Length: 119
Image (cartoon, rainbow, N blue to C red):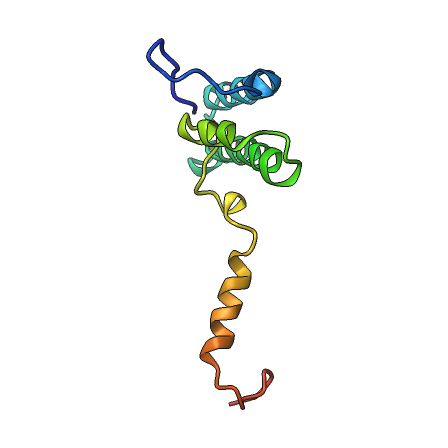
C-alpha cells in the first residue's frame, strides 16, 4: 500500500497526474480485496487477490518505465520510494538477470568440455 503523502513529502514529479487515476483504481481494488469477506476461505486464499493486485500494479509501473518508456526515471524512482510499486518483485528485476546466471555457468565450465556432455 502506498505511503501517505503529507505536506512535508516531496511533491510527485511531472507525469504523475497522467497515471494517478489508474493508480487510484488499483488502490480501490486493493481496499476492496482487504475488506472482502474471508469467512469461507482458507487463510492463504484471502491473501491471493491482494498479492495479485500488488503484482499487477507493480507490473504496470514497470511496463510504463521499461517497456513503453512513458514515464521518466525521476517519476519511476518516486513511485518506488512511495511504495506504489514493489521493486523486489521478480517482474521488476533487470531483464538480463537470467542471462547473467547462464553466463556464469558457462564461465565455470572448462573450455574443452562440450555443452551437452554427460557425466
